[in-house]
Length: 102
Image (cartoon, rainbow, N blue to C red; front, top):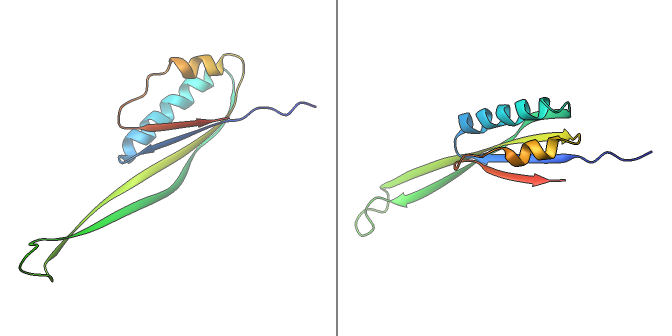
């Protein structure tokens, strides 16, 4: 009995709507090839907070905080013959980082 190959696609972005939009587009493309899909699975959101002094020479107690969040989604695919070709033709946006592992 042969073990089926899995493809894991991890999407990362600072904008959650952009990640969700592209996860849906990837799923639509993969559904056309009759592959088995698991996801999109939301992974934990990481929030980065930076604290900066407002005035570097005068007031230590006056500070400002900036934060940004990185959103992630995971999609697992058990591919058919055409699935990889369809995924290679897909153009990805500049605001989304895509990591593909098999």
